Image 1 (cartoon, rainbow, N blue to C red):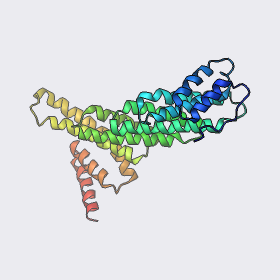
Image 2 (image 1 turned 90 degrees about the vertical axis):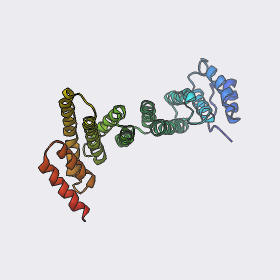
Image 3 (image 1 turned 135 degrees about the vertical axis):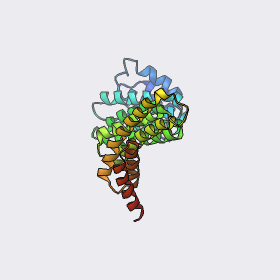
Image 4 (image 1 turned 90 degrees about the horizontal axis):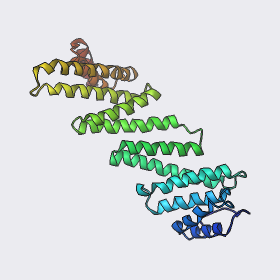
Length: 285
């Protein structure tokens, strides 16, 4: 398989010819050793082809290790950095299209990694690192890309995943905090986002309900008022998010049930009954 589609420039030496030949033979690690000498050689270090070839060799060396193998991510990072340098040096645009493809490859891999860490490893910190790398690479090849929409998609997914984990992991607050911060970022960008408002409303409500459940156990009487007050604050925090969803979609059974429970927990029984009746009317349709 032919690896490169590039012409040879005057400044190139035998070492670059050798590196290109090694790439065409898929001997990428050997090619890298040759190329890394070329980029510090005064004769070839300012040649855009040197950096272009380096980007290609590092990209395919990384792919040969398995694209989810994070132990070799330095190879992918080096490929991206080299393509950027090649573009800066390439005054004629000879390697622009190929460099763009290398950067796009890196972008796609970064996004896959951020999704893997979010959904499989549940390591949101690493996921966020790769998401930022994805954004940087994507904007290099398409500065007009609608990154706001992608941010909403990413943080909505993070919020939904960790909201579910919060429930499934016995209401562990570390999961709730991650969900909360992610969903709030969504609302900063899109205040009318129904899913984010609903998930935040449910999240705060569940946190309040968790505190209330503590009262069912042997809690010191001096702590009861504190627990009740903190739970009440959480129910009040849930209310504006649920109310927003109701304003946007008053027929949603989930929000009717949520508002019924919130007002009941706040001892506003008239309001609670109002939403109970609306929910019953919905169920009879």
